[in-house]
Length: 158
Image 1 (cartoon, rainbow, N blue to C red):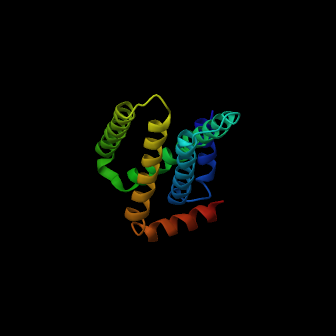
Image 2 (cartoon, helix red, strand yellow; image 1 turned 60 degrees about the vertical axis):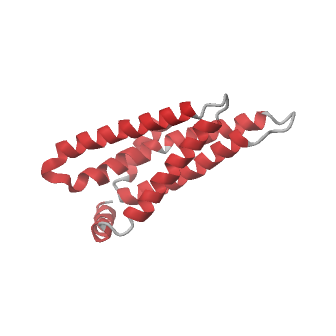
């Protein structure tokens, strides 16, 4: 539900806001949700307050998964945009890397399994923080002028 809704919202927002801005903001929300997930699964809740684990964990999980509706399309559009003639090869490589990384994440959660949600939440936090770090370091100045022009064009069209 959250993934589909956020994808629909992203489609409407992309006419007014450049994809690199949507992506950066969604990654920040992902890291915050991942932190809440990790914190919720790590805290030893006192007797009588165990319900707080569920009241914090599941909404954070919903928010984390919902941000995928902003991240996947925006990141794909930004990655595929400059590919031109080799778009087919680039798309195949992108799909391969997505499956490879998700498979490694799944294996890591299984390897760290301890009977709690802590390994899953930790891997999710590390994945979100890693994606944000990559975005902050590698995409900071790349195509900055082109993105500024795109933002102006998108704003003018709205």
